[in-house]
Length: 221
Ligand SMILES: Cc1cc2nc3c(=O)[nH]c(=O)nc-3n(C[C@H](O)[C@H](O)[C@H](O)COP(=O)(O)O)c2cc1C
Image 1 (tube, rainbow, N blue to C red):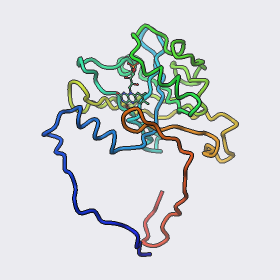
Image 2 (image 1 turned 45 degrees about the vertical axis):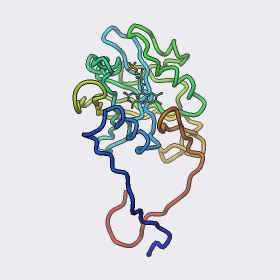
Image 3 (image 1 turned 60 degrees about the horizontal axis):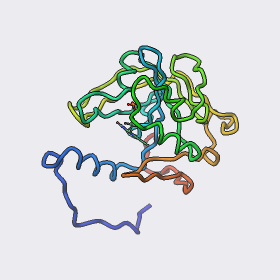
Image 4 (image 1 turned 90 degrees about the horizontal axis):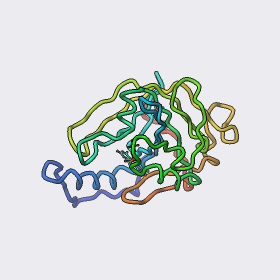
């Protein structure tokens, strides 16, 4: 089927990353790659201190085994965030989803608390024991994924470089009021939020359906 209402652009502003500051590239990227889902990540330190932090450089990346990735940037002073230090000591993580009703407390948990602070307590969340791993789940999040860390891949070095955590999902916990019989989540009910650029967020309250193409062959997921 020919699509008739598409416009082809002729003039572009081209920003060559190698000629720009890292921070400028960071802000451009945040405004280009969006909306981004948010992994609200629960880890524990070597001493057992619980830590929470949201990461929007996040996605599901495979199903054999089911796997996720998220990335925590190295800080301006060249040190790593508590999440990455924790994962090197205890390679286990719970990825909790973020709904509209927990957005403010999630935002509070993004504050750079000292490593000895229990961030469940600091941000007002309820820790729920995990089935397979040490870090606790966030009781106020309707979907939690317990993961074991397969690898942490470093891209670049110094401030703003990426530390990509690859996690294998051991189990999904789905709040019963949002679970469908086929093992998926009711998107009408879950009311997730996503990150945009700056301080902007998006909801998924506006949706549309686009059936897969029937011409051209292939094996669409
Ligand atoms: C919605 C949201 C998304 C975020 N995404 C990222 C991200 O993808 N990568 C990152 O390094 N920091 C991200 N941050 C900032 C971290 O959450 C913040 O640096 C946090 O203090 C890290 O905690 P930690 O030191 O306990 O690991 C995000 C913050 C918010 C509020």
